[in-house]
Length: 213
Image (cartoon, one colour):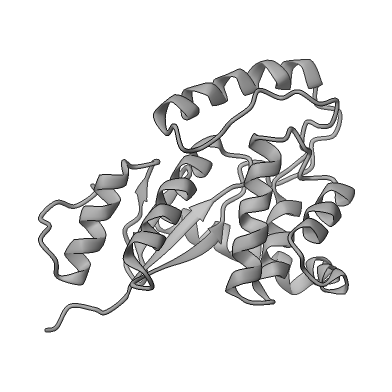
């Protein structure tokens, strides 16, 4: 059997997860490296599935000190300890809905908003569960203003929930988690870039012998 010309990876992620930003940074670099031979299918995972209003801002600010560990692990992924009076985010769902609405416009629109959401939360101290913040990020990403209304459609919420439930069915208990599209096994954790690279090369039939497991 000939090796595939394209490797497609399913990636479960949450916009509130610092290690998901690490994985996103590494996988984006590999997308550029493999020049069209790697396709990433981003799927929703909900670390905070329900609204939790009234979370303590100072406690949250102290928690964001832990992001510096992720920054040390991946120097190309920027993180800033929370510096604004916004937040904390109430739950995971709003950012995922906005990302799905962007995906409906095409892969470039999704990529733009996907990066903007991660940057806004982890670098700019912006509450990405707020409607106003999401609208601003949408505009800053150059997306057509009217299309953001798609985020309110029940169909997208069902899609977000279905992707989260799919993750639990294949044994994903945390994120980031990556699997070969169509496989029933996902590997959890922000793996080293070289591990992802070997996995991709193996699927493409290049010289590689190691799995990421």
